[in-house]
Amino acid sequence: MKEKQYTKEEIVARGEAIYTSQLRTSIENDENLGKIVMIDVESGDYVIANTGLEASRQIRVRRPEGVFCALRIGYTAVETIGGVLPRRKQAA
Image 1: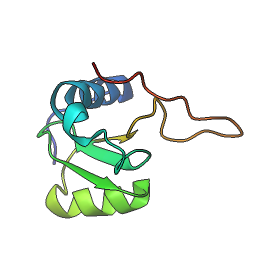
Image 2: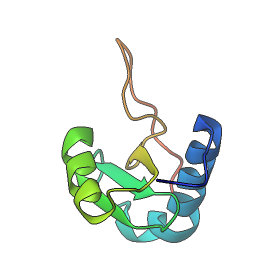
Image 3: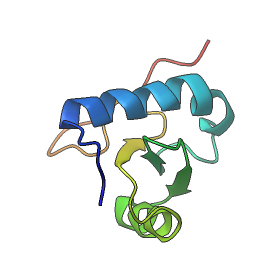
Image 4: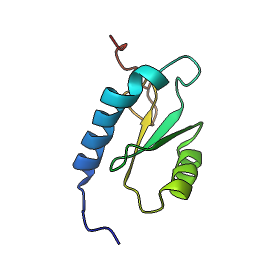
């Protein structure tokens, strides 16, 4: 059982920080645009998949006790209801 508990806000902040500082420049490309990256916010381990469910299943095999954050590569939101997904600003 995990000793450390995170709030939803802490999970998102840690996931975004890992994505921005460690992953974005290497995985945000035309091949991965729109796919889901699932990040273990404690280890930095991640998987990329076409759907959130697929990504969740894959990462849980490697990190069954992980704490996960899902992001849509190249976009500021994972899902939208009746709207348009906003794109992230291009990496500098």
